Length: 196
Image (cartoon, rainbow, N blue to C red):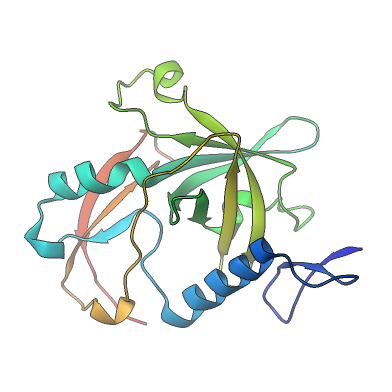
């Protein structure tokens, strides 16, 4: 019997047997992320080794993915950005990207798009590399989810996570992602304006 829930951390839990290695890994990742408040998917310190935003984009954009959720009826649901955090295809994203609002459960079908070698502006070409994704764990209170890529062989490029204790107000940052206003694998620069 599978249930969702574990003291605020919503994780797939098998009650008739111990957690699988994948579920244990997912739980460890989400707990580590919750404790350290790492950088959000696609966000990197611009001052990292004095790299320019262009150099950061060239180094890290291949580990940024676009995720689209679909309901059982096939209707397109939420979409958003994720970051590949392990070479074997684990992706960190926001829970609201992969959770159906009416049910509070993961979308039954997730499509994850990998960045092409060169973004052309033609969606058919730019979204030609895709894989199925499945939610391994999520926490709605933290708005974090961990998904696993299925159907494509790795190793995958990885976006390294960092310690938020290194970040201070005024630090330059870049975000790579898919804004609602349009654009695929866009680059945005800015500064940290607050700390919590």
